[in-house]
Amino acid sequence: MVRGYTLCSVLAVTLVWGPYASHAAIPGSDAESGPASPVERPSEITAAAVDELLELSGLKERLVTLAAGLRAQLHHPGMTEQEHATVDRVVARYLGPEMLYARTRLAFGSAVNSSTVAAALAWYRSPLGRRIVAADLDVLADGGRPVTMGQPSAERLPLIERLDEAGGASEAALDITMALVRSLARAADWILPVHARLGPGRLEQRITLTRFAAFPEIRRAYLVNMLVAYRGLDDDELAAYARWVESSAGRWFVEAMNRAVVDAVGMAAELAAVELVTLLPQTVGDSR
Image (cartoon, rainbow, N blue to C red):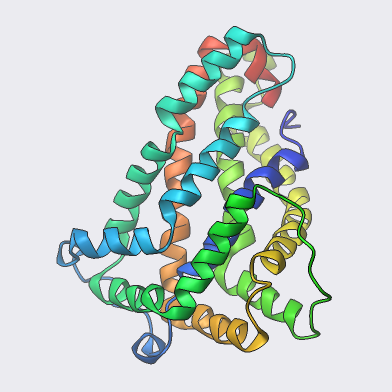
């Protein structure tokens, strides 16, 4: 099994990344007509438009917290001070927020086109879009501080579930953590003696089982996190938000952003894992 990466550690990154996945939604009007044509050349999108969109979405702030969560997963109580320092150096080199942002921006910019960027900018510039981003960033800034809130209305939880379902938020958050788990497990398996290796097939089976077992708890934690994040929004605002997320263009845009972040983490994790198993084989070997 994949040891050293319990549900608690998976939840750590889920709650860090959590609300981001579904707020890349696109509002209605023109966006309701369907996803933009995928054949439009990425070169038609201005760098300034992509940068403004990522800035309005709070991507940089989210990646700072995400990077901290990924770093925390790589530290274990039994490590020496030197081993902790080694982990920090490797994480800073490959999984730091600046590197993750650069990779995400590149992947995202090559996946979207001017129509989807324009629609997303219209959403993020809107008063409700700005309020939602601010609410999410406030939760990150609170650092998990307990929050007192009243009993949700009967409509509130179904709305939150709609947001998660349409935006694939829980799935994306779990994918981010599993990218790190998979990279470490593969790298650790490769340095073992041939007779002791699981091999790609069996290793992937175990990782799949771990992911399957983790998802229900991940989703419950994420829904609670959204209830806290959006406690300042009324049901009508959440309903409007859900409609935007459920639009065909909104779904397309969300998938592009989720995929860009997961790919960025996955690529960085592959590089970090190779270096970690070389420098700390006795430590990261526990990830198998």
